[in-house]
Length: 316
Image (cartoon, rainbow, N blue to C red; front, side, top):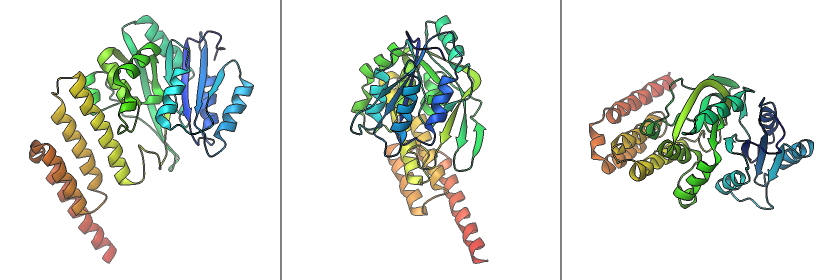
């Protein structure tokens, strides 16, 4: 990674209680091989472990490459995300959370080459692998990836850790969408990429360049099924908002069906039959057309049969 006298790329890395994982994330940035300047901006939010010490150690070792953004009090994930971005000086910004890492030293070079050659392209992303921390297991993401607004509304195939975007477009996103006015949104990257699909062109490169660490107690991948459902609901509510504001509303039923089917799928394995029925009825009241969809009764039958089979196994 070249020194950051006039960085072309800024890496925006927010971190909180990542002391175990942060060195791997930082080293993966330092290992990038580029023909241009790269800076790493660390946004540390008053962690309760030794994350800030790790940050300070790297800043001391690489003062011309790494800068630290922090404060004397915790500001929360959304404000930390925003202030870290605002400290980025590059023409392009790459996102990498402090518990993820890059596995390809040419990631940034290939993405910058793509954006430099195509002024109409606002963001370039690649494929990413998933590392399941609890199982010590790595597997590639699904090979099917989307770049258009309509598909991304129901299937956001963009991994935050695999992106590179134009800084000026990200700034426009904050000014136009004002995500801080939507505290119910449980993520800041999903609405950003949907907005990019409206305002610019997105390119997907086929290489796997990043690894997304799946922790068992994170907001998006909690072991608690109600939290998983709440996160998925939030993603689809974001899509509903974008479909209403930037689309024609033609995707509303498709999004509501996706929102309901994901929740019912989780509830077909977890929770009680009563909880399943309450969610199904709530979704149907919001959109009566869902009553005609097969997944509602189909997953209910599966849940009842699964429950009976499990009870039989316990009684033996």
